Length: 166
Image 1 (cartoon, rainbow, N blue to C red):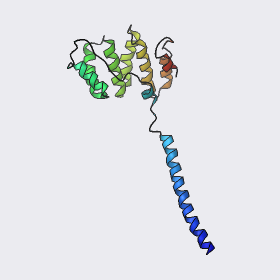
Image 2: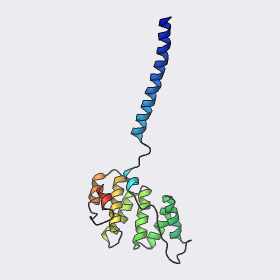
Image 3: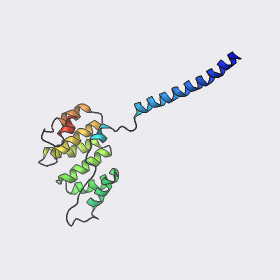
């Protein structure tokens, strides 16, 4: 009877160890997969709201519609509208900047870099924001060496300097 009692205790212990092993594997899998962690691009991108508010501005204009779509995170739809607006006024630095971000968000990093590098090479107040997003476009593609080159272009007195350093 003592042998039967020992066998009865061993079976539940084996079952307990089996479930404990399964739980440990799941926990380790979650830490490896880490669905709650964000990519470097998502962590450091900062221009998620497009503001075009001007006194007397037409809120039904294509640009206002594109901005609303951008702000809602509907980048593919916003890109179509912002692309048309950008083609008509490529000298508008704010429009160029947000159009480039929609390109990055929709997987067109090369095209975005073309627009952003033009901003960087110009005299826009968005010069270093453009450099930062050029770097982020490289980060998104896993090209960290090029990203570091662009982050090095951001001067110490710029608001993005600390982000560029980290």
